[in-house]
Length: 306
Image (tube, rainbow, N blue to C red):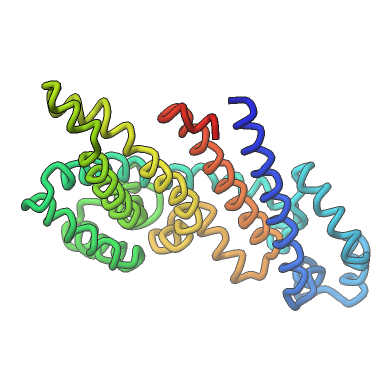
């Protein structure tokens, strides 16, 4: 177990280092003078030059790269041209809202997607299976921002049941989390159905049936446990994508998360905030993948030997 975790952690660290390097040099290629944006439009050239010297922007790119790595380790994400300070505290202040939205979307996925996939597999080629399959195709085909607009129009504007923007209470989570989770619910339902059908056709299921085990025992104790690894993989990978995909949904519903902050930062050419949020998304994705791989070992201990 220790060797398994050590290898995964080392791989995550190597990927994080590579991504940090790529992002740094990509931002170096973006045209524009960071000192000019930080100083503001009313600054003189002398003030801009002094700021460039103070921030070390005149140093060679390798020196700036090493300083950037050291700064990240120390929690220094640079200087924001909007906040005139390190943007980390402003980014972290938005994280709880994004995590709440992502957690709500994952909860909806687990509560709806997995049972729907199980029901579709157990009623193969019957009406529930066909209805769920049609719903899956529809949810995969509809863009989440368009679904969000439909939900706002129907449940907020027409019926007035739920708030459509901002955070005014837990009811505000319903519409954005539904719009964000819709595609993942469809993916998980389709994956669960496919894996369940494959497992239900295996020899150990026929053996269990011949021994007289109750169908619910076979499904819950044997089939479902073997079918969960691919499903957990999909949920884990898509959780990382939800963090990035929340940018559009947060903007649509005026949700006060890091996605909305990132859109504002792009419009204001605040590269320090954009870079900080991008790195936060990357680190979040890597941490989620690591947690998923650890979860594998509890679902199927044989994975530890891999």
